[in-house]
Image 1 (spheres, chains in turn red, purple):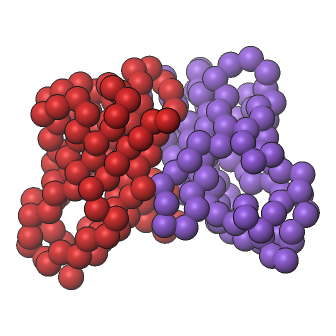
Image 2 (image 1 turned 30 degrees about the vertical axis):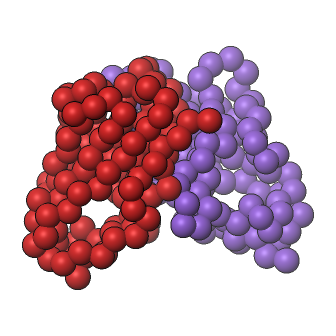
Length: 112
Length: 113
């Protein structure tokens, strides 16, 4: 089975902190994604990566950055956390091409 | 702009009744279509997918969906729901030229005894 693992299920951070969300996949997938999930808005794409060190902005990249130094690992970085970044964050991976994505369990981040 | 619409934010239904969750997408030459389910405090799990071939697609847990190109729809159905089907359901579309899936806003299915 494909496994996508997010390092934390729940996080509480203070406003202004730098926050790292980590994601690891074990299926040698080329593509990795970070989505944000908010009630009534569904999943919105923050960033994705199609290869090591390659990244593209999604629909809502402001306030976020990403890092992919190894194929299996994709990190989401909140440079200076704000309360409006309180949300559920979902990492996903997929093979090359227009195939389904496999999701991690999610990280519920609260910024206070 | 490419978009996916799930008109019903919540669908209450009694156990053993049939259910249909609606999904419409903005028209495109070529689309691949997916339904995902999310149980409380979990990630998303693939229910079924349409890539090509028969327009009626069967998935896990007794769900099925029908691709209707003329109506740009991909509605999800189950003939008899169980309490355990209570979850949030997301429709997603893969559009040509976009690597990531585009998701709808989700439909919360509430199965009552």
